[in-house]
Length: 402
Figure: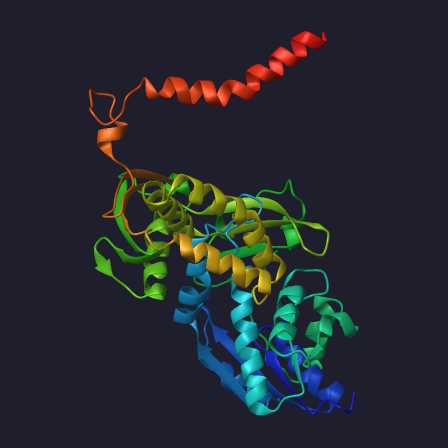
């Protein structure tokens, strides 16, 4: 243990990481630098630096990474229409690579021997953090207290904090744990560990109950350029501002709530409840622009990559060679994905009203059911007979052998 001289800790200021900060100092007799990333979690960051120093940190970084988070992590995933197991929009998963990257950069700048995190030994985050650490700094040492210490209950953590004069948030106990950023908020554990237990209405933060949403539909439009959203209702915005705007609009219309049981990378199933209001609208709008701008075969090939791409994010392989090649391939498909989508938001539902693009492949003269002079229905006869040839031969062969 004595070879650890300096550690960079991913720090939120909550009970777990506050205890970890003091535990690292006590256990390793080392200096600890804290790093706190503002990804739009809407938590009070004022005083976090002072609290870290008071608890024993020699230096504390608190950085606003919201624009980088949305531009370089959320938007690339949405260009791919990423979704895990058909439901989860990867709100927690996509945040971990950025936190890890900046943590490693600080460790390199400060000459630290190790990095540490507060992820538990059962969850996915330990994998995501540590795969990213090793991908970016192969020789880094990693300290994962939840796999090493004997403080295995909230009561023990509270007692440790009390004995070491650690300030901890004085908030009522919640029967679940949460993680929030600009893309979503998740609720796991506690009462939700019973998959039959209903999520209560007072749990939700980013959206109203659909039944309580306005009785009048809200009509909006979103503009895309090369696969990325750039404007809402004609007003151009930065990535983070745009996503926050969509969260507000979709949230007040009761959009984006899901309740699912997912398969964790470590092998167990886990029940989670998620709110992703802006992301839910954004994914549908993006797919709609693609419907008129992507070639059929290109779209089908890209769609076949979505499960693998999403799995890589979920499992923590953002900084991997396979992710690099997938992202390049997907981004190549997005060069003509520009246009505008009109949507109706109403009591939890998001409905497409219209779409347009200067690069649209939709041609009314071909698609019309009225008379036209660009397409001959008779051409379909030979097309169908050629495609049916192998089916006819198969049936004839079966008839001969029976």
